[in-house]
Image (tube, rainbow, N blue to C red; front, side):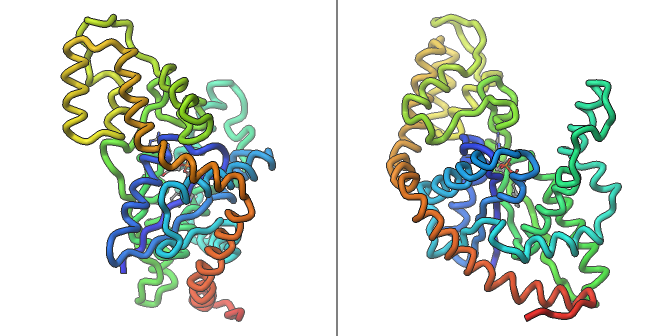
Length: 337
Ligand code: TYM
């Protein structure tokens, strides 16, 4: 069986980038025959970036409700919160002990903080917690705990998955005694949506505050957000360059090949940006509109969401508990049953 696994950090409301980069491909993969899936809320990771408990608590519900509204079938998928699986933090430590510090120095998220500090003229590690520094190890623990083969993600996560492979390889070599304790995971990227642009054309990201929320704000919120997508100043009637417009990338993320073709042709023929945006709104709305009612219904019943997560955690631990015992023994510790 092929195992597919992915997670989303619970620091904000899900946006179109999370949907096309992770949720949509993951749910599609979970429907393939012979696939076993593990999708989760990365709520330990959230603590690295966010110290607002109310925001984390709300985001956990919003992200869980989004997965469920988007069609996750809990009969096929093991769906849980990372923080409900204590084996993951235990594995995190086993992996920490085989991870070179130098490798963590090269992690993008850490390097970005160091670069920002240098630009500000402060100490390189100013404000950097050990959580941020070790972020990729916790992510490796998420993936290796369930021996995932495939990890559907956006491009920004590729380095983390390569690091998880390296850690897995080192651990296998050191403790496997000829066995492959860990599967070497692979990132699964959909090229056309690997980096969905946000309102300003940079990667859509909570940290750039340029996101289009998937459900929050309703149909009006979607329309208002798309209205704020930056376009060049060409007027209606003037030919546009579809290849340089990130509105087109947003459009294409929700369009079939024929619709993409028509959109490009009309832009070149002088379709105005206002009308073009209306088409993008209609297209996205046709896709997410039908899921919105399910989302609202779930958000009105947080206890149902919690119950789903608890059942998922119990199922996940059926895999995690025996595996962590095996790993404890492999490194020379006593199995704890
Ligand atoms: P996070 O929460 O930042 O993003 C969740 C998923 O959404 C994808 N994504 C995008 N894809 C395309 N275009 C965008 N603009 C865009 N923005 C976000 C991300 O690539 C990701 O797939 N560290 C991870 C969470 C995590 C995880 C894991 C993922 C923790 N453990 C194990 C996979 C496996 C993160 O912060 O993603």
